[in-house]
Length: 194
Image 1: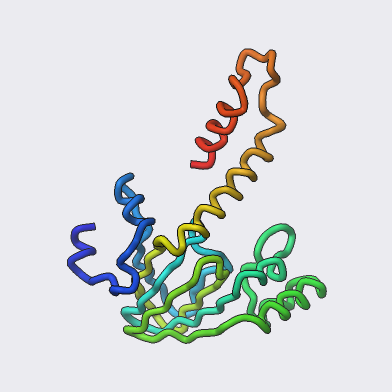
Image 2: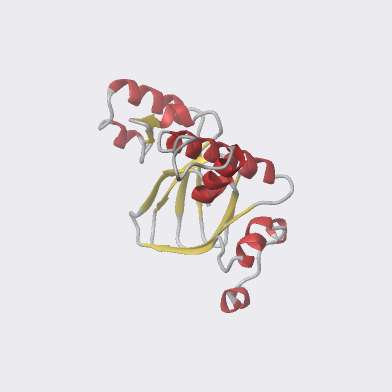
C-alpha cells in the first residue's frame, strides 16, 4: 500500500473514502490495478457493497456499458445477471430475455474512456467493461457520507437473504445446538454474512 500511494494521488473528489478507511483497519482494501489485453472484459455486475467506484485509465481504451438503477430486473436470466448485454451477445438468450435486455440497453449509457480519463460510477449502476485496446487502469471502490445509505441498504438486504437461506437449518428450541433467542440467531447470520 505504501508503494501504491507513492505512485499516484487519489483525485480530490474521491478522497473522503469511508470504505477503504474501514477496510484498511482490517488489513484489506478496495483499491485495484486492472490490466488486460484488447478484447478482454468484465461481465455485468454492480460494485462491491453497492459502493461508488472510480476508474482512471493509465494506458489504453475501455468501453463502459452503464445501466441505471431500475434496469437490473431487465438484465436477469435464470436468476442471474446476463454476463453480456451487447446486441451481438443477446442472440444466445431466449426471445423474452432478448427483448428485456434491449429495453435495458435503451436506458443505458455507453462511455469510451481513454488514457488519463477518470470515470465515476454511481452506487447501484450495473455495468460491464470492455478493453478496446491493451489497458492498465487504477480503480477504487469507495463511499462517503452521501453513499453510505446505499451500502447500508445493500448489507441489510444481504443479511435478510442469509437469514432466509439458513432458516431451514436453524435448530429447533429443544435441540442442543439451539440459539438462545432471536438476538443470538441474528448475530450468527451477521457472522455468516461477514
